Length: 123
Image (cartoon, rainbow, N blue to C red; front, side, top):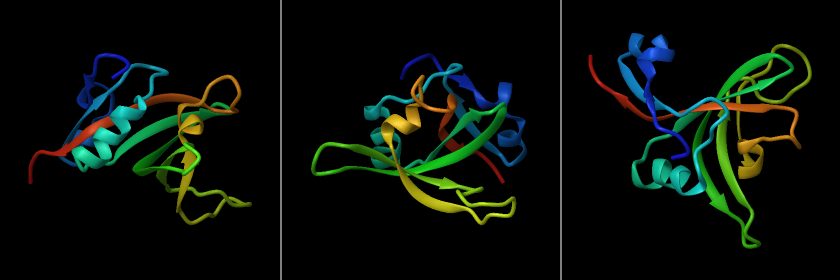
């Protein structure tokens, strides 16, 4: 991981409300590719991440990954807003490049953080 985790209870009471725990990496940190694969394939756990664009924050869920024959890495996301014109948009599932997930200076969004090792802890 790129930074030590903190518990979700400190930053995201919504996880506690629905009886989940999660680790959160540091501000402007992302999971490395090996950690993405570990979460999805080895642990069978999707994870969420938050982006900020034009001052608005938005969270999506990463639920898969693949590498193309030419070596391009992709993550599969569930996006509750989707990409569409207008304000009322159904969610969608799509692949984005790992580089888009990471973000950076070449992108219009900032990668804020990840919630990973999400675990249901009670009834």
